[in-house]
Length: 254
Image (cartoon, rainbow, N blue to C red):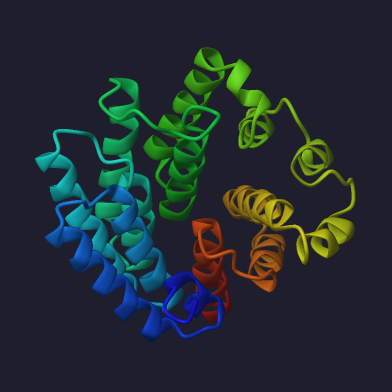
């Protein structure tokens, strides 16, 4: 357990974790047994340490690996989000649009249970932040396509968020779907011990914050982003990092 990088991350020993990830990474490379999960694990450790540029480089390496394996990279969404966190907004948009195109033409096989709902929601976030109508329109079109083509999949998370975004569920209903409670306060309390509820709550509050931001309600947006970062970081929830990024930006701008 002392050499397990995930355990080291949980203990807050991020630099040690990254060194261990690198050792495991090189061992896997030597045995020619690398997989995309190796890149994802290493990038997750680097994100936890706040080393976004290192995580970006790791995920860019995953694209080269994917091309060598003649497959679409299922890590392109994560790369896009890390590029955004690194301050590379245009690269982030390009990576995400490429990811969505790959889902359209089926060159990329794997998506969330909703069939690409997360991609559409993140694209809307980019559009809202950049005040770029074309991205917002593309996000709307993609999420409507997701709903049409994968109605059954919308029964699974993050399907409820897609339905909320498209106006089929209100704030109360999506909270019940994601956290099995109708109270935000109760959901926050539940999230302290229930990791799945915490992940869902992070995504709910993040997307509500983005909508508030788009509507010009900056104080409400900041409050919702702050709710996200008040929760324990589940490590693999990029919305947590994005919310932290927004809290820092909004506090500085005010």
